[in-house]
Length: 115
Image (cartoon, rainbow, N blue to C red; front, top):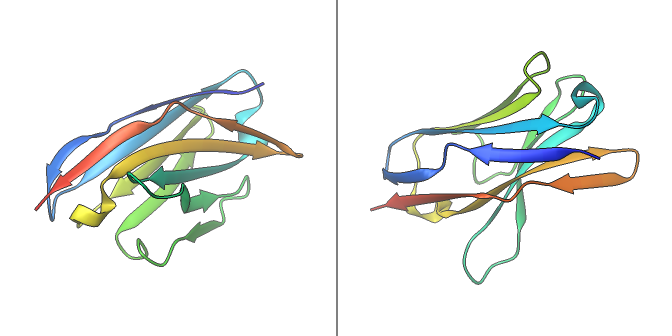
């Protein structure tokens, strides 16, 4: 079992920045592939960014060049640095941990970008 707690969401103006954090506990964090997803009202949850246990990253086209995912295995934490935020980035952001067929989710953190 893995427990995930997101933080760092909030209200920001367009063009601003936020850094989301996801603290993990309950299992060996370093072996998990960690991802950030987001879900806007009336839309399906979609992948934002992924970082593997080896540090390889992947991003949705809509956030490439603006968002950066990173992880600190010593702190059992994954981050999402979000720059040049746009109103369309408004969503609930969820942290996900995946390993060997198991998948775990955090409770989500709201990000609202005003125009």
